[in-house]
Every structure is written in structure tokens, then in C-alpha cells.
Length: 468
Image (tube, rainbow, N blue to C red; front, side, top):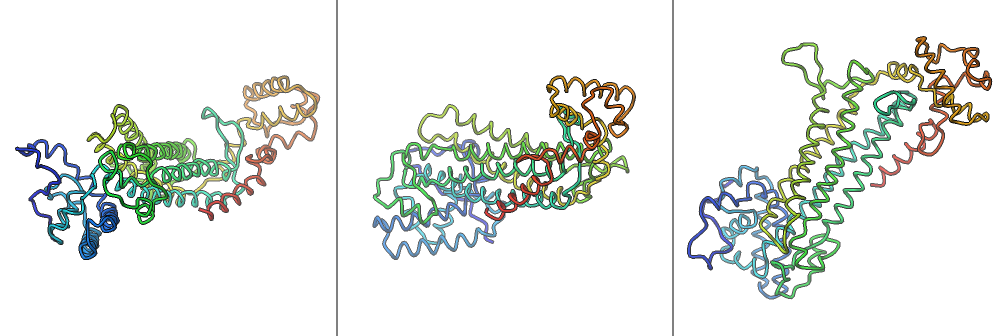
């Protein structure tokens, strides 16, 4: 592929006697990162060529030549690597595209900026790029959601302790636990759908800030570029970056969920918990200690969360004090979004592989759910159902637990005679309550961990996955 020439192409300069300093040229250059918008820029320029033809700025022959040149350029750049753009002398992707087009179609390329500002151009390109990024991220999310459902269906009866304050609380089904993360990531999917709608507004026709001086059909342009609506105010259109901020917020929340998942599984796969073992595909070793199997995949997910949160704060800080309309500060909007999109897609794919390759240790999980008086709430509710005020029942069972812990007794060590010492309301029907299976089955409400409710939730999850 031919390297771009070193002579810069400028969209301005007549008002200046001297050119910008080399220092400013280097300081303001954005091509090193906004080259990612090249395909979107060509797509928008093709639509604008047709608009210029309808406005009689271009004749049919000129429009056809420009479109052929843009198609050829799009084909050339489709296989271009980032290094291809680095030697170019142009300051940004917009001037880069026009410069390369000028090599193909001559001075006709200079006509294509008629009535168009880079302010609206970058807003258009960024929205086109982000819409595609949202769909790509949703695709990665769908993979993770699917893997979570598959893992839940694979082990429908496995028990583990649920935790509050990182202390064993009540037994739950492993499948119920996985569906908790399914719900988190489902919300992320919906949040991204809202981001897509925010980006799905076409700004082209806004000019630099006051609107275009050419009377072309903006709704027709929006339809051609697959936008559902046009911007309603030109000042807002060129300076609005809410769609980028919303994407960074959605990415940050999704990373928070990924980080919580990573923290859980780092703990659960440790020797101290032993609930599961991570696959070798997602683990690494130690350069010094031969026995180590480190959860680097999960630690990196957890670590990258701060990076994306920082991107959200970065853009919010950039936007907070900007007057209307466009300001060059907005050049700082793209790198945080580009990076967040790349990191999120990679982390989602990594998390899916972690779930897919993990091996459970069901007996260890069940033992943890059996030991430690996780049945205490069920015993208190047993008494409450027989007329004992709950706060009294709570104190009765609390004393039972205290005495048992001091004596080193687990629930399975207790006889009916032991229980009756604490309340005459205990009878033989309370003995099954001491098992974790009883506590799970008892939680038979919508959203609960009872097997029948979890089966319902899995069916609903499958149905929803098929619908997206």
C-alpha cells in the first residue's frame, strides 16, 4: 500500500500571513487516534456528495467521479493498519481523507467541503463510529450472558453459601448466583441500547454552529446514513457529547459489574474457598514460585475498571465548563471513548472464557453451605409460623447458635432434644430445616433461589436472549 505524502493539506489559511508553528502542529494533531473515524468520514462524505448534487453545487458527472474516488479510497483504507496514517502530515482524519481523495480526483475534492464544517463532520463521524461500537459491545455482552445461562443450566442443583459482609449468610443455588450476574449484565445491555438511541441523531446540516446555508434535505440524509432522527438545534448539535459521556458511563457501570464478578471468582478459586478452579487458559504462573496458578485474567479485568472510570471522569471534566458552541477542547472526547470501547469488549470476551473454562467443586461448596448455621433464619421463621413473635424467635435461635458454636456443634450435630431445650415449639417437623436444601426450597417466591423459581428464571433468560 502506498504511503501518504508528507505535504500537508489544509482546509484553512487565507486569513493568516504566517502558518502555525511546528510546535502547535504537533500539539494539535489528532490523526494518530482519530484515524479510527476514517470509514465513518468516508460514509458521511458520500452522503454529503449526494446532498451537494441535489443542491446543484455538483453536477451529475462530478458527483459520480467523487463517489467513485471515495469508494476506491474506502477500499484502500479497509486494510490499512494504524501505522499507515502516522507518516501523514495532515492534522486530522478529515483533512487526511480529503487529501487522499484530491490525489484521486483532483481539485474536485475541494468542492466537497462546500457548506460543511469540521464541527458537524466530527460530530457525525463520532456518532456513526459509536453506534457501531455499541452494537459490537452488545454482541460481546450477549456472549457473556449466554455463557452464564449455559453454566447455570449445567449445574442446576449445586449449592453454595450466599454471603453478606463476606460472611456466610444463607444457602443459594449456584445457578441462582450466576443469574444474579446475568441480571447485572442484562441491565448493561439495556443501558447500551439507550446509548445507541442517544447517538442515533444526525448532526449533518448544522454547519459550524448556525446551520447550513445550503437547502438540502436533512431527513433524507439521515435516512441514507441510517439515523432515526435529525438534530433539532445546530448550536447543540456541534457541541453535544452527551452520547459519548453516556457510553462511558455505561462502560463504567458494566466494568463495575465485571470487577465484582472478578473479585468473587478470585476469592472462590482461592485455596481458602476452593469452590472452583479456573481454567489454565485464563491463568498464569509465577516467575519464581513453581506451584502458583494466578488468576491474572480476572485481576486485569478488575484493574482495567479504574482505567475506564478515569475515562468517564476525564470527559466529564472536559465538558463541564465549555461555552457554546464548538471548542477545540472537544478533540479530547475521542481517546477516552476509543479506549473504553476496546477495553470493555476485550474484558467481556475474557470474562466469558473464564466462565466457560471454570471447573466447579460442588462438594466443597455444599460443605460450606452446610457448616456455619446458615439455617438459622429458617429456624427462626419456623418458630414464627407457630406463633412466636419473630424478635423472640430471633433471640431464641441466636442463643442456640451461640451455645452450639461455643460447643463446636454444627446444625447436623443437633438432635430434636437439643432443640427443645430452647423452645417447646420445636418438633420433629423442624429437623429438615437444619439442611441447606430445605432453606433453598423454602425461598419459593418470584426471584427467589428455590429450584422451581430458578428454572422459571432460566427459561425467561433464554427467551430474552433469543429476542435480542
